[in-house]
Image (cartoon, rainbow, N blue to C red; front, side, top):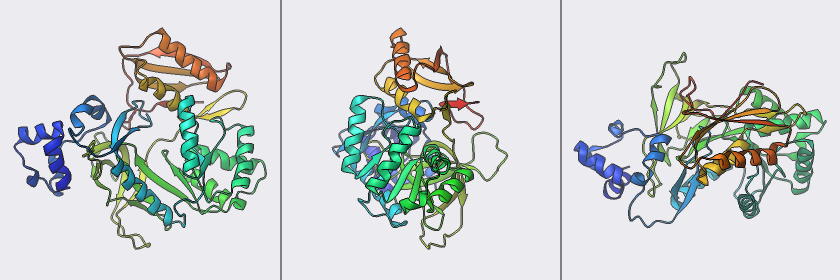
Length: 400
């Protein structure tokens, strides 16, 4: 931690100014008084990105994107070293379940709508010995094709969004297929909350553990579920703090999680408010690994977009459509989508300076390409997107 803060004091404009204005030296900050440093969130990160990037730091880096799950997508630099540590922590978690580096992976993850991004995803899948569904819409033909390729390519494990994996498991049950024949060592779900009902059906169908991987693009991997079923914090990669929620909750055990990533010196992520509520634990896991635990992650579940014809899409497809527009600087600051009835979507957007009629035409075009002509799309321009009672901003809400 001392090395990271020294780096921030020397190279990061925001923290250099903070140490000077508050009269602290790097040596004054330790694990016991880390709360002296300010808490930041995605909004602050987006608005002050240039002040948080290290100046003159030559370590190789890449650009990462957030999922836009709060309706506010973000593109930011990330050191390759930080990415490497994140992957190492993930593969360590895989080994807990007998999955080795390079083992074949099946994915239910979604297909980018942009041609260039789609080609890049396919190339990455090839290099990493994995494959995914043919199209984003998990209709019967797509799921039939996925089953065929599963038998042919014999993956060792399955990874995906909880909603998509659950849909696939239900499809196997409804069509009389035996999910046990895949002989998965694990099914790993990430990016969405795993409810007991999801776990029950997935573990029943595939006969293997459903493993929860929890993290964020900005912070890296935060926790991983071991073979004993405990959720271990990756405390060798990040510092985890639990703060009282900023709003009143019935469950006093829930805390707001704040993360400090120890490895991203290109864009130091220090005391970052992820936006999730968790239940800390003081237990020691029977697997005897001494990594600390959390009992529960209270996040949101991705809803399913539905039509009267029975077609269904995970709402993450909206991330690909609207995030692409946001990153191409077409003038969207924030968005939220509502489905109140079948065959209908209301897209609320907070416009930026470059928002125009062309932006709306482009949104409609992309929606028609993905959902077909039967989906009625209504675009509403709004001044702001209100938060949920949980304090988070949901990008999709379905009352169907």
